Image (cartoon, rainbow, N blue to C red; front, side):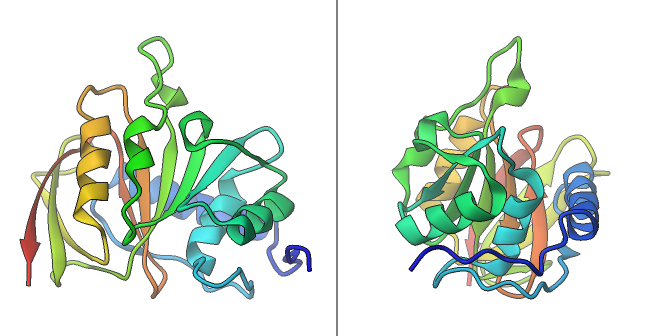
Length: 201
């Protein structure tokens, strides 16, 4: 059976409203926003909320990868966006299950000094995002943040987090990261943010 095409996703209306939310999240790192619930049905394990981000930014002129490798996820995103699946190191966009250790993060594109915008964009699926909760507490400072911003992320493998932060050590090189949780919450952690973290119960 082939991948499901999602006719319910409106490529004008849905794309515009999700894109505005993503821009708002990038402009105010650490702010938790709510994504709309869409009538789409991705393969098992792939979040509809993360899929909606991919539907918004991917098109026939972009490339993507999924981590861990999953043929059903790959085919679903390819059919619904027209984007080309490639290796993680070559991908412009990477969707990953945040709770599973994916060492390929360390090899993602960071862009170049003449073109830092060529760094990859990550869509990371986690269990929960909250202003104050369990898991790992991120403290963000930098552009778009008045003093500092704190947020808790549950269901994120710490090695994945460490690799993302390592990739972002040489700003403006690095990756922009969007987290989505099971409740449709959205959080951005752009490459421009300085991040420290601690595990909380």
